[in-house]
Amino acid sequence: MSKDAPLRDIRRVEKKINAIQKGEKLGKGSEIEADDYLVSFLISGGPTLPPTSRADSLKASLLARGMELEKGVMNECVLTSGRAGRVKPLSRLSILKIATALTLIALMLAAIGLGSAYAMPSNPLYSVKRAVESIYLWVIPGDRNKANAYASWTDRRLGELEYVSKREIVSWYYPLMKDIQAGIENVYRKAKSLGGEEEKEFTRKAKALTFRFEKLLGKVKMQMKRAQKVEAERAIERLRLQLREREGASGGVPSRQSGEESAPTNYEGNSNTQQSMQQENQQRQTQEGQGIDTKEPFEPTQQQQKEQKLINQDQQNKQQEQQDDGQQRHQRR
Amino acid sequence: MISREELIDIAKKAKEYDPEGLARLFDIFFERLRRYFYYRTGDFQRAEDLAAETLTEAIENIQNFKDRGGTIGAWLFGIARNLLARWLEAEGKVEMVEIGPTISVADEEQPEQLTEKGITYEELYRALKKLPDAQREVLLLRVMEGFDAKTVGRLLGKRHGAVRALQFRAINSLKKILESGGVGK
Image 1 (cartoon, rainbow over the protein chains, first blue to last red):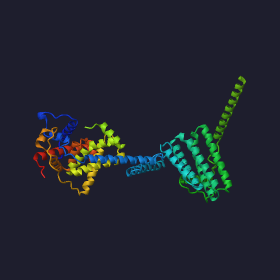
Image 2 (tube, rainbow over the protein chains, first blue to last red):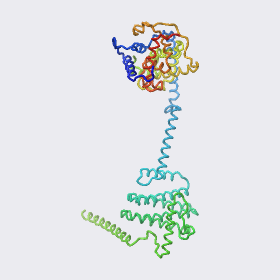
Image 3 (tube, chains in turn purple, green):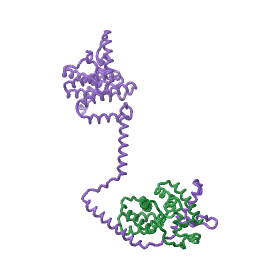
Image 4 (tube, helix red, strand yellow):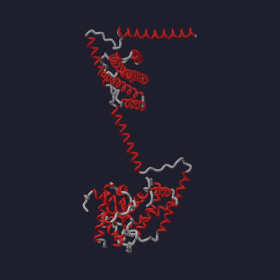
């Protein structure tokens, strides 16, 4: 028979087999095809085989085996009745399937983790990045490692603030500002708990981060809401205060302008901070050479002082109104 | 023809090692398995042994069987095929053994033409033996045992389209062999 038998004939035979199996009778006369009898004959089981004399004994032995197995199951039930439930051992195939599934999940998580490392705010993977950071912080042992991680993450946050400020994604200013503030404070705190040379080292890092933060905040502050702006200024004040305390406590952190240890200390991921500090040093040196006043970037200007006064007045007015309301209610009663 | 519901019920009872269920399982499948093994081995004694062994192995592993709606027959024939493969391997892949005594078919229910010709089971065995292995399996499982093309495809590891093509070729080849009378020893 040729291999490429017409599809029509294949279907015809299939139909015929199905029809005969369903009990339909063959057609009459010319409708009956030559192979119909053969198909019908085969479907009926073909020639009858001679009867077997052993059938009864084989059946009896099968039933006996069944009873043995039933007893075995019963015994197993009695033996395991004290347990909460019998755990069926896993087959090789099941183990292989589970192992494959776990490997795939691990690979997927690793891929997401790696992919999220470069995610910026407003990216869907950004929350994954932050979660990974939190887990890392939770897992790593020792104050030094933690301080390094805080410094590293804060440096990242500063980069992110720079990123969102370039793209004017205003909604991210405030959350990032809070994160950076918390990060720098954590570096100070860890530096304090470390003591000695390490305290100096991490105070220097925190100082570098504070300066970079101040500079960046100067750019983004104008786009913040008034209350947020006030909070930003307070954050800077708090950080400055902490810096002064630390510098006083550790016998003074080497000056950035002294030239000897002007570069911030090395820690992972602070290349941006190093660059910005070097640029800042250069700018300051040139400004000093030109006789320009080199104030701290957050020295309040007249404009800012006016704004602060307005905010204070607002708050006083609100308090006054609340007091008046209270008095009126009291009088009505 | 056994209904799907009945097969489900038998499988359920067999799982509980219920004697009635096991007896029913034996009654339905022993003869079918014996026939299948006979047309594969050509040995009645061996066919009986293998059929009994298939049923014993089945009830020993019945707890692993997951019924997908009356599929116990396909499961049993899967076990049968494995046993046969083991047996063929042990025998050095020699399938031909002594043929039993010739009995002609004079069954009233069988089609006239064939009964006239008087095809015996040994002639049919010889004719089937001349077919390629895949075609013979398809004829036995699909046509004689009545499994659908999908089930046979699953048992043989082939697509159901391939099973249909195989059954078409097998029927044509078998018809030619029987017509030419080329079923002699």
